Image (cartoon, rainbow over all chains, first blue to last red; front, top):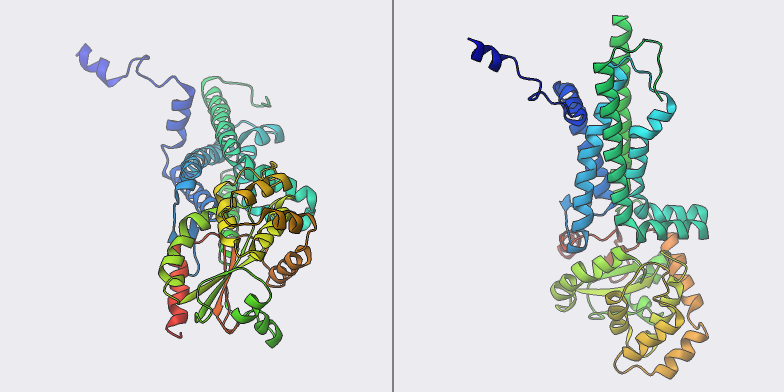
Length: 185
Length: 237
């Protein structure tokens, strides 16, 4: 009997104590957030693939992965998945938590990650920068083109950091009963 | 409170859907900047300029048979990594399937907008074309492509590349490059590209060799995309 009871109520050691795992389970136990994450990831993947000239809709719809684009493609896949998770978690925080996310925490969370990830696509937009900003645009586009892979790695690092910070906020708000008027920066 | 939360959720979801839909539409619109000459009516004079005969006569480098029924005009920059992707992956297939068989002629036009050093490479390539060595020089530059504006196509390096091009008179090349003989020629290519709204490299015009029935393609498209357009033109559709 005591054995049965033991298996029915998981011991504290088997419970996910890691805030990353706990927050992930918390958010993605609902289909809505899985759909939000999948939609964000798929949309970002499509947009990135278009900017990277891997996906074409005209004259025929075709996906094309040449050898020189393999590394970038792998990084885009990682970014898309992370972005989907982070955006979905931010929406969860926004809708469910009593935490008041001030503008700073938004910037340090998904907003910054979205911006940094989209910056990867700037290299393909360089021509538009050139036409509007002249020599400064040329230099900016050259920089983004030359350092495309490090920029992508940076955006992945930012997304991991955003995931970590959101997870911490989410799990803290669950575990501790803070006064309702307390704000988190 | 419950009503507010429900309304709030609805608004958030709507905002999410609208923003993502507009982002994806923007990208698709950006990617499919390919259109035919019905949407960009060109004057007879412009059609004449784009005929294979005129392009060759004006000194544009070309590859293939002068009587090929179809012409592909390639607007590229030697510093552009997507142009390099095209040269490495798509151009050999185009060459083998259509150029060598006499169906297509390939014409090169300069659109040096990737970096501040791009103009020098375009001038040098035209100097190599003077001696009939454009395509060798073109291949050499793309196979040695480095980071944009990192000095890999400085005047000194361009002269080194010229000395590595078999059969090229380096003295003649150096004097041509130093005197910037082809600056106005390259500028005309840029003006032509801009007149079609090309800002991206590589960009292509696929047309009948008399300069009619233009179709525009933008980007380092795979061979299959070119094949679809060329085959459609060959069948007269």
